[in-house]
Image (cartoon, one colour):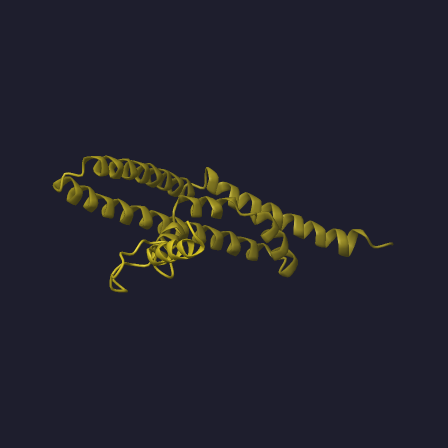
Length: 184
């Protein structure tokens, strides 16, 4: 193959893909018919924000440091109690978001299972059922965490304990610095 043949081949390969994505486009097709790939990426990234990983990230945050810093700003036990209640409210709000995500996802999957089974997509229906089972398992875990939060037990107790420990350490640091380190 000569030099001109190489350039001609490269030109044909460039024409088979759209400008902004790697989606193949038939030669001569009208622009705007095929959806851009980045449209789907934006939708899925929004959905993933409120899955069970989002809840566990909330549960795994370091509330001891937050409690310590809060006690340095306002060293009052009423402030401690208010912030513990605020953290619980944040937890319940997070649980509500995650629970809503999974309930909506299961409803959507049920629709796809029904419509795809009517059209004879056996393998796709089996795959959708597997996704649904996984989502139902995650939803059960979220409901379990919610029950533990209502009873102040399980993973949720860690938030309260770590925040309180940090707050108390901050109070001790204030006393250490302002009173105990003084020369009498």
